[in-house]
Image (cartoon, rainbow, N blue to C red; front, side):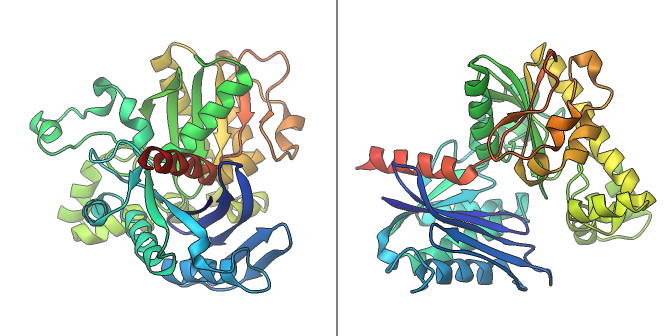
Length: 397
């Protein structure tokens, strides 16, 4: 059974075509830096590897490019779109409506659309991917895997805000949590590596969007993102944690409209607002040249992560492993070193040589005698989505 996975992020689309249940990747790739002039299209199969620099103005054109690559008579891996049995979609916000993998119908699409305001950088693109996939892969079943599902186990004391109760009970205002597919996958890999299903883990997903999860005995018990994927850590263009009264000050004193404030905090803040760059690779390069704004932004980013490590270690009464994952978490030795610096009181001791070594699979970057493991675990949201979609179809047959 061939399953196409579409993982639409705020500025990228990752995709894989996977043969299940063998878990064989037939092809994979990414449309990166969508909306920027320096966009990159990558595609890799057993027979060919392509990496092209080209501008992809929006997610719709990115999805059409993926379909063209899959069906290309020379480079593609399928001859007909009907070969694909399932298209599995990552959907960021499922609210309280979806706690598990779901077959997509009109009602599901309508609900995803209703939740677009809570994940404006993601849900619209997720929905667009679903609608377009329905027109291209007409024989396939469309399946949604929700970022919020893994975090359904967060206890009320951690997910409820200290505002009047009716906002929680009647309006569903609470911590939902995001990047759940990634946190679930890497926590399971880490627990298996540690040979400890009861491990206390902090998983650190660092990309253009960033989040951290406290995972105890395989369950999410706290998470840095909340009602929407906007608070918590400093992200590519999102500010993360902020005093809410700043919003009122921007509106009432500085004359911003609510729409302008939303755009400011979601699209113009974070590392971009601090430096003028949203790509951490550019920021690190500038920092090495002595760019003070970039140096400070990296320090702020690491400091915010360190605070959450302390909080989640306290919440779990201990820590067995700190797990870095996703594009930045897996590839930025600089940021990992900054996060782990001066954390020896918690048993975190980074090995500099291990930290800079490259390896495609799970690896330890702590010193051999360290009390707490520091792991880099390559995430594979696409494989996790394929597994869940395949399991769901088996239940439906």
